[in-house]
Length: 141
Image (cartoon, rainbow, N blue to C red; front, side, top):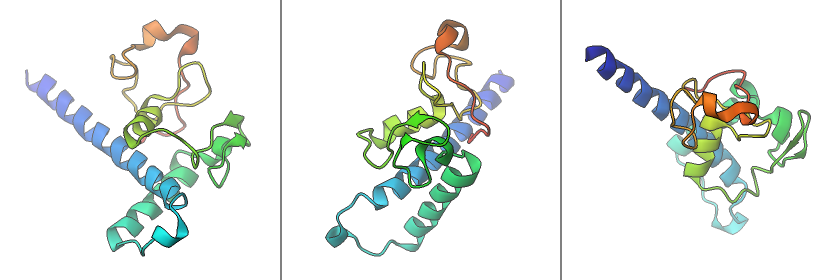
């Protein structure tokens, strides 16, 4: 019983870390999509989150290898990747993609517990077969 509670608690904390990381990356992409006239100086917290997102994008998750240094996508260094600046994904969908990757593509997952249960797109690892996305080089959770 106690082991189950501790495991669930770790999973929640892990999920929060991934959500924060994805939100920080989303803020960084979104900052350049707002019209120039609508921009105001970011608060100290927003500026901190933007820098956090940039660091994750460049160093921890190394997103720039596929999505290019400016997140414009197209033919990147690691393959053909979508533009993160022109994405139509909601913050929740972007979080899911960062956590779970994209089945059938080269987009890796960054949640260490992805596909250990049905948290990712309702599938476990053994159900994915050849569509299983690769693991990221570093986990964000």
